[in-house]
Length: 150
Image (cartoon, rainbow, N blue to C red; front, side, top):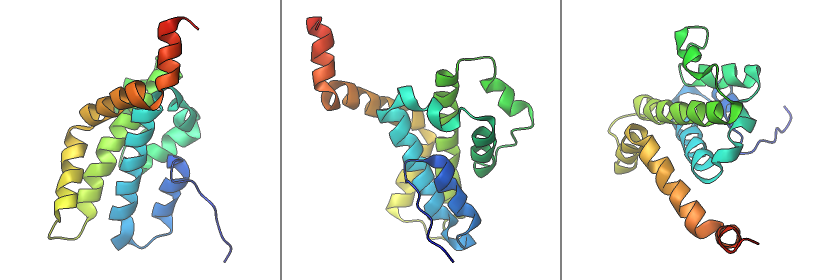
């Protein structure tokens, strides 16, 4: 045994937990993966390509979302810039991870799990709300500097 460090904001490392935790705990990992995808794509959309730009990471993350990356599904992300590809890929994975969290959770589902299902169905809307809040309130100085031409 040896300790492993990982960041909850690194989907690739977080997804590796699926290989070591018992199956009854997969629901929690999928939910954290969905949360990370929502946070990264909503607050830092310009940097999403960083997590999925390598083909190996792309495939690893695709497998965690029950995504057959060797099939035609991967082609919907090819031929575009890495930044856009990363955002779309992470958004789709976020949807799938939230749905997998609900599917693998033990019944009866709590209110929190029903919210997870709702966010999974409306992931793009949730991401856009975070984008707006981030642009308007979190990075205010940068927004004002751009308005003032500084």
